[in-house]
Structures are given as structure tokens and as C-alpha cells.
Image (cartoon, rainbow, N blue to C red):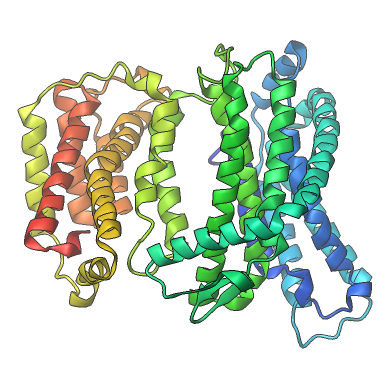
Amino acid sequence: MGNGTDDRGSATGPLLAAALLIAEYVVALFVFDSDRLPIPDDANPFHLLGGSMRLVIVVTTATFLTASMPSKSELAEIRSAFGRKRRTWPLFAAHLSTYAAALGITIFVFNTGLELQHPWLWVASWAVSALASFIFLVAAVVPRAAIRPLAKPAARALTLGLLVGVVALLAGSATSLLWKPMSRWTLEVAAFLLELAGQDVISIPEELVVGTLAYEVFVDRPCSGYEGIGLITVMLGFYLFFFRKSLRFPNALLLLPIGIVLIWIANGFRIAALIMVGTWISPEIAEGGFHSAAGWLLFCAITLGLVAVSRQSDWFSIDQGRPGGSLRTPEGAYLLPLLFLIATALITGLFTTDFDYLYPLRVITPLIPLWLFREYYRDFRWSWSWTAVGLGVLVFILWVALEPAADPEKASVIPDTLAQLPPAAAGLWLAARVLGSTIIVPIAEELAFRGYLLRRLIDSDFTKVSPTHFTVVSFLISSVAFGALHGRWLAGIIAGMLYAAAQYRRGEITDAIVAHAVTNGLLAGYVLIDGQWAFW
């Protein structure tokens, strides 16, 4: 659907629309904080809307969590509708325009020097713009012919999601008695994470205060994490009940303790991130939209992520026959490891400065898709190739030779920061950096660029294209894209060409991975032995 004119029924359009909707929601939350609206609370209509968002998010999550597949006849109609060509770019343009209008009204209303007259008129304008934006996005993604067959299963899912969501919210509130002991534990986790990030931590457990010299928070009832535990327990409990026939018991019962632990740990990360945002960026942003956005996004991601993993895992799920709707597609096998890697780098970059304290997460997150899609990698043949090794050494030499002069201040960031960390933390970071650069990064990047893009530029069904199939267009474009990703055009393009050559010679993507790993391994040694930190 890249040109907005053809929708072939794949999941790409809905997934991209969902990602766009989440991104727009996060942006809106950074400027939407009902507590900062210059209207008295008793007459604050935005405050009512802001308070209802938690119900909307929980019900939406519950709807996705408990939704079942449409019937065979409905599914046939839906696939037929999505398989027809249609023009969607005007609908996307209308969506972006109405979203911009809603966002503009929000920013205008939150001007603290503004005395609003007729606040409900502003609410109506905002609601109309927001609703129109959502409708245009749905219209762009869902063909008109698919609305009728989708309506019935969607209504079932929404009704069930509303029931589960309300019960989950009640359970979250019912666990409020746990908030004081949990606040102390959350405080300890947040303080540990801040220390790991090299911050001077202020921690007063008896007053439930934690933070830095520049910004501190009180870990009160909403921050303790009890509500998330109640929510995820009910959500996963309903999921286990509704899908009990396709889940493997007692294995599936482990989803409950795993979810509880993950949601509590995630809450500690949220508090630490909140303090970092307040310290490095802005206290207003930390106390405004970021505070709620981070918590609810983490809740949705963990809940739906656990469900997705359980449905794709032989250990949790009995029925693995998903020919039509499986999430495990060839595209996912080749692209998701790199996407997970990039997404982790972007997220950790929000909470770090020049030194990425959270780099070990980049080693962990790509392992998730690599494990879930492991059946696609079983046919890879790993055998020794002197050509691959030699090309890897050649790329190393060229990479070093073409490296621009290093900025002394930037080059000293890593060694200076490591010197300030405890030895165990510094050793862990270095081990993760070496492991990530020599194993995880080569696998993720070669799967995406040589395994997928190089062949996808030849045929839309890239799995039918031999790894030895050479075309000038695919060779050049994939190499240029590889160079663009690394921000070093000449060195990156040459490296991409040589890694492609490694794959062309024997038709094995593993040769490209080995060549890339050799390059990065030599760079890691060059950094650690000779102190050439600029290459990291």
C-alpha cells in the first residue's frame, strides 16, 4: 500500500495504521494534560475526557485480547474486499488534516494565559476533529465491502472487551491495599535503574521519594504498580478461559506470574524514565502526557505481547496450524529482528544522553523474533568460507581507512563513563556491546538487507528468488540503503556491496552474516585493544 492505490489483503496496511494511531496518541498525550487546562475542575470537560481514556485503552486492549477469528464465510468476504484495488491516499490525507486540527485545538486550549469562553464549544470542535480523524483512518484501511462481514465479529469482540475491561479496572482498584509496600519496592527498582544510568540518586524510602538532584517524585498510590497487576491478572485470566481449548495447560498458567512480574518491573522502568525525562528534558512533560502515556503503552504492549507469544509458542499453545492468519511470515522472519533492534535503540535513546546505558536491551529484544521465527532459519547452512572471512577483513580495513577524524570529546565519552560505573556494571555493558555488535547486529542486518531487501527488489515473493540471483538494481539499492542506515555513505555502501558479494558466491546468507561478524569482531578488538572508541 506504499502508493496508496493498491491493497492486496495483507496485514501491512492495518499494522501501519495501528502504528500511526499509537504514534499520534503518544504525541497528543504530550500536549494533553487535563490538570493544566485553565478551566475549573468542576467545569472542565477535557478533564472528563482525559479520565475516560483509561477505560478506552483497557477496553481496546481487552477487545484485541479476547477477539476470535471470523467465520469462514465472513473471512472469505473480508479477504475478497481487501484484495481489490482502491485509492486510499485522499483518506490518509484527510486523516492527517483532521488529526492536525484536533492537535492544534489541544495546543491552543492549553495556553496557560488563555481565558476560555464557552469551553463546551471547544470540546465539541476537538471531539469532531478527533472522531473524523479516526473515521478517515479506518476508511483508508478497511474497504467498504469489508465493513459488513467485519461488523458482526467486531461487535462480539467489543462487547466482550467492554465486559473484561470493566472487570479488569475494578480489579485494579481493588488491589489498592497493596500500594504502600509495593511503592517501597517500586522505589527500590527505580533507584537501582537510575544508579545504573549513572545518576546521583536521592532516595528517601520512609517518605517514598526518589529522584535526582534536579527532579524527584513521590511514589504514591498510582505509581506503586498495584493497578497494573490487577489489570493484567484479570486480562490474562479471561484470555486463559476463553482460549482454554487451544492452550496447553498447566504450561499456560505461567502466563499469569510472568505477566505480573513483567508489569511490575515495567512500572519501575516507567518511574525511572519519568525521572530521567524530568531531569534531562522537562518537568512539565514528565508530569504531563508522558506520565500516563508510558504507563498505558507498557500495559498494552506487555498484555498483548504475552498473548502473541503464547499463540506462537509450541510450549503454550496446542494448535499451531495457522496457515492463513499466522504472524510468523517470511517477511517477519527477515525484518523483525532488525526492527526490534532499531526500535529498542530509538526508545533507549530517549532516556540516555551521549552514553547509551541501556545498550544491553539491544542484545535482548532481537532474540524475541529470532526465537519465534526459528523454523525459518533451520534451512540455513553454516559452513566455513575463507571468502566470507576475507571479505569481512577487507570491510574492516576500508571502514577504518574511511573513518573521518574523531571528535576527541565524543571519543572519550565511553571510556570516561565506564570508568565512573561500578566494575560489574562496566563489565556487563562491555560484554553486551561486544556480543551485540559481533553476533546480534550482523544477524539482524544481514537478514533484512541481504536476505530480504536484496531479493525483494527482484520479486515481491522474495522467497522464490535465489540468493545467487544478481541484478544491478537490487545490488545497488540494497547497498545504498545499508549505507544510509549506518550514516556513512561511502563506507556503508562499499560494505553492503561486499557483504552481498559474500552471499552471491555460494548462495548462502550465512556467508554474509559471517563476513559482517568478522568486520564487527575486528572493530570490537580494535576498540578494546587500541582504545579507538570512536568506532563505537
